[in-house]
Length: 176
Image (tube, rainbow, N blue to C red):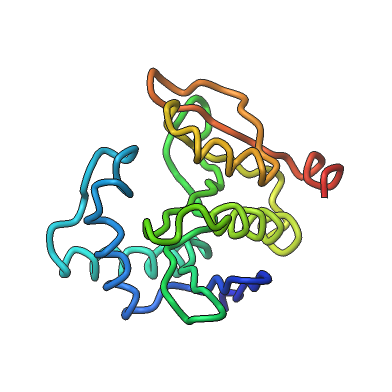
């Protein structure tokens, strides 16, 4: 069974079917999707497919992104967390990727950082991972700042557009 992660202001929980509305709002916002290649979703049916895909990742890989909820209001904030990537990127055939995406109205509140730190703690303390990576667009300074605050450090340029950030369990134990 997947865990629920709680922070002072947020609740991170596994995706549920009714998260499709929030996914649709987020992934049709050009500003949210700017560094991700532009708007990805065109219909609510595609948002439902996205949610189902993440739920399938839980079943197949034991982990996937989590829905982020604001505790005080119950509002959908976005998603955050770890995802097991199985693709060959610069010698990494399999790695745990830290990611996050928030509705624009929740930007600037520190929620991305708060959820990212909680995800790193969960990865090392609960899942007993040896390292966590984050892939970020070179020009996306705000996302690089979040990864940095969560303890990850830039360690590799992947291609002309992306960096890998990383934190090892040893670095985590020394920092936190």
